[in-house]
Amino acid sequence: MSGREVSFSIILPTYNRSSVVEETLRRLIDQDYPPDRYEILVCDNSSDETPQMVERVAATSPVPVRLLSSNERLPAVKRNQGLRVATGDFVLFMNDDVWVRSDFLREHAASHAAHSAPVAVLGLVEQSPKMPQNPFIEWYQPFAYQLIEDRADRSVPYQFHWSMNLSLPRHVMIDRQLIFHEDWVEIGSEDVELGYRWTSAGYEVIYNPRAWGEHYHPHDLDTACRLQEVIGRGLRDLEALIPDPGLLERYGVFSWDNSPRSIVRGAARRVLFNRVTVPPVQRRLGALRHRNRLADWSYWKVLLHYTNRGYYSAPPSRTTPVVTLPETDRIGSET
Image (cartoon, rainbow, N blue to C red; front, side):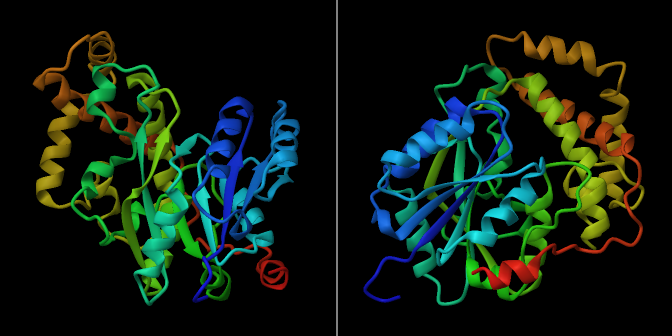
């Protein structure tokens, strides 16, 4: 590939977010990158005007934009659908509400070029300043990128294999059958599960914060709590598929199998933050106009309450899970 820019297939699952996705597409089209070296695949099951909008944008775009219609709800299925028809050297998975800068593709390409072995490249996503701001948002940057802020251009653990801004070599995904597992009860952990298999196969996840995007999605304490509850329910699937004894402890879920220190801390947290005490605390925190140290300490405890509630409200997952790789023959034959 010397002498030519590497090529990308950007895979964008979406559902009923026409106006947001239109801006996402325009940002992706406006790249400082040869338009014949990348394509955009919109994997859509919307009931709004998203299909018509995509066709309208595609009609005038110098970059190939394809609409892949689907009846599937799960993003994992849509991502595999995009992978099935992708032609790029690399596939770049994104959320439909991440708005990027013009050097976005060049940063992903540079990170891949810096490594002789195949790697996954994780870009940075930060909450958009265009969204309503409040004390909680000042504290809470979604996706916990602050945990890896000192890992720029270095390897990060599989837990940070997040598909909102993530590029991987297409041929490795296909040849090693490293595609998204589709049999999920809950949405939200399928990218982490793939990250576990990716790193277990000997590949790294490299963090490049310069491959930056802003998350154009409103957040407040209540929506973050609902998200944490979904994450908690999804942990039932994740723990069935990942033989990682420290998984629940890492997500802050109380278990008697955790370390003694984690058990003590988790038990104390459950005494202070439970189904009786959390609702009034949550209302008080949501009404704050200015941050303070007590609020910063309490935010995370409230979120962990919802993670635990989600986990313990979900039924145990399959006891002998099998990582399904649906239609891998088709994926291999159509590339």
